[in-house]
Image 1 (cartoon, helix red, strand yellow):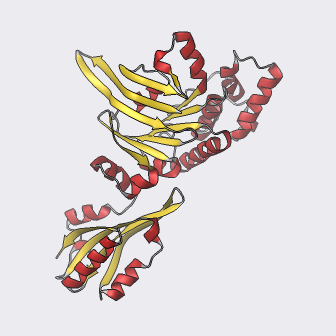
Image 2: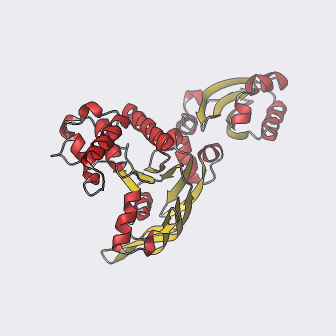
Length: 344
């Protein structure tokens, strides 16, 4: 549905040339929910604005459903943009128009009859759960309700692609979950390809099928969400993944010399990472019995990503050194990531 070929975007500011996006190559399949994640200044928002050419790439090509947008005339591009809806962090609603009028705005030049427009708007408001608010003004709505109006408006022209640029960043966690649930519903029921720009790995975890990680204008890692969470390769990706669990707290505790990390002779702290095929196995009890070890679990985390369990734990292990080494070898042979964090 979306393809970037060697896309770069540079800006000139104060005599300086800023490379916001550097030679990006990406393919986003039809019907997928695709996340693009990075810290502020990574280039992710610039990249997503290249999809509908709100920012025209300095070099490279952008394709939507086989059509090269970068090669179109102004009139042709305007027509193609009807296939691309967009929602933003700040909603961008018309304050002086009702919910109904905001959703109706993109249809003002459509060939639908008045009755067809009314039915279209009714269906959209029903989809986002706001049919009873059609006469309300944005000032009378909560943040989540405003975003629902923005989503309905973005869907008015039956787009093939929906772009979400940090659309949940201004919302509280509970409202964020409801908006992500709505976007999943839109994707499932309407078959729309959704591209989500975010700096929150939890958003990627909750909704996306695939993800690209950006740093300094480049895509440094990409793949299926389960694959990225299970085996992150780049340091920035590992940081993002760690931000969604409490397991990485152990490094802070070790650095702070927290009493929990004060080990007796022969003890060590291990961090285990395991995937779906191992999450249901009784590994802790097995290696405790098999290798005569005592294991005190400090942190643990198991959750579903893409319907597959994935998780890890941090434990203080006590026992004969040779037994600990045998247990570590056993776990690694089972394709479980093992990190010795502290060793006494």
